[in-house]
Amino acid sequence: MNLRDLEYLLAVAEERHFHRAADRCFVSQPTLSGQLKKLEQELGVQLVERNNRQVRMTEAGRAVTDQARRVLNEARAIKSIARTFHDPMKGELQVGLIPTVAPYLLPVIMPLLKKQYPDLKLWLHEQQTAVLLNKLRNAELDLLILALPVETDEFEEIDLFSEAFWLAAPKDEPLTKKKNISIADLQDREMLLLEEGHCLRGQALAVCFSAGARESAGFRATSLETLRHMVGEGMGMTLIPELAVPKSRLKTDPVCYIPFHKPKPSRRIGVLFRKGSYREAVFQKMAALIRQHMQAQR
Image (cartoon, rainbow, N blue to C red; front, side, top):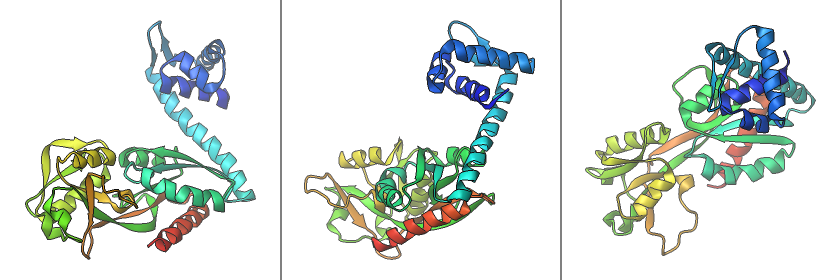
């Protein structure tokens, strides 16, 4: 048994297709199939059910795949540790971001990080909070950038910045005539919100409930951009994080963005990583750079 065999097994388990798994591993399909057969013979159990239509993992195959994923992650960690001791700001990092942060923060911070740490390669993964936390727990990701706090004490947090919410409303909404609004202005209003699974949904709900507003019935958006389009079509209002508010706004834009009076409703954005991570010094330097840059923009 070797690491390459485990990579083949993992690819088959995730792709559920021998040809796609072989393409992913840059080998021929007969080579991949043959190595998996040898692995099954070595272990003395069937890992994969094969037929003409689909590939299924046996119960043993699923259990071995779970362990193989951990072994491969640990193998990558060993290589990363060696590189880190040579130069902490070199090597690869698997970075997870939530969908309401990634499209708006990455254009701001990626050129900055690339310039400051050119030998640090960041692999970016955009998923909802629950998925990211599970991947961080299983060492599939090294750090997360997301909304804090997270309801668990198994990870370490680093604050990056606080992000205010703005009201996004159609142009014919009377509130758009105001330069600033208060939370009380939302009383008895209906608000468009994201679907379950987005942490921004819970944050927006908290603001709405405190204001006496309510969620618009019958619609939940899959993304901030969907919400923005719905507002532009005159379907209602929503809360938008400050980073998602366009810096320059055209007169033809059907959406108006209105800031709140102080104290402004807001959310905290920060970094999350596993306690005791050998790369904590890297995370601290990255966080300090991002924090300094974000503060300078205000």
